[in-house]
Structure formats: structure tokens, C-alpha cells
Image 1 (spheres, rainbow, N blue to C red):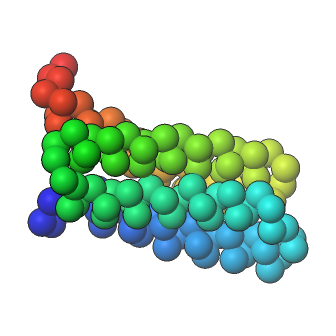
Image 2 (image 1 turned 90 degrees about the vertical axis):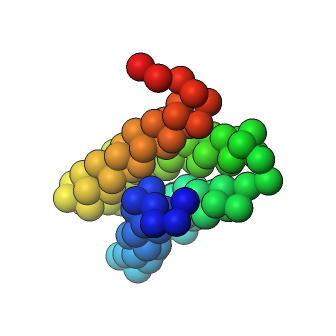
Length: 118
């Protein structure tokens, strides 16, 4: 995974999530939900980075699968924060679009690693 688009995009997404959580905390004084978003949103890239040095193909797939679960959870927290008016529509739309893109990339990576071809 030398120069990986997934690695770069997941890191950039993490940076954006950190900034969004800082904004929610500053503007709304909300710490509980934003902490959940911060945890799951940054875990995506951390797991992709961890998979870079996986011990085996099975370990790689496992780490990517956990990253996929975290991405799905992140969409939940984005939806919840949006529906409770903690995120403005523009910030929500951008973050959700980026996260869905990561989900698609992770699914593709996992399928390719398993040898599943559509």
C-alpha cells in the first residue's frame, strides 16, 4: 500500500472529522455525540494505516472490515448530529459524501483482497 488513495482519503477525512467535532463543541457545547463521531470517524483511517503492516492477508482483510464497520457507524453519527441540528447541512453533506466514498473504497478493497470479482 505504498501510495494509497484510500490511505490519503481516510486521513483527510479524519482531519475533517476532528475539525467538525471542534466546531460542534465550540458552537453548541456538545461533547457526548461529537466524541462518538470523533472516535469512529478517525478510526477509519487509523485502521487503514494499521492494515498497511498487517501480519497476513487474513489480518489485512480483518482490519479493513473493521474500518468498514467504523465508516458505517460514522454515517450513523453524522445523520444523528444533522437531524438534531448540531451539523449544518453543508458540513453534513460533504462529510457524508466523503464517508460513503470511503465505504465504497473499503468494500472494493475487501472484495479484491478476498478474490471476489463482480
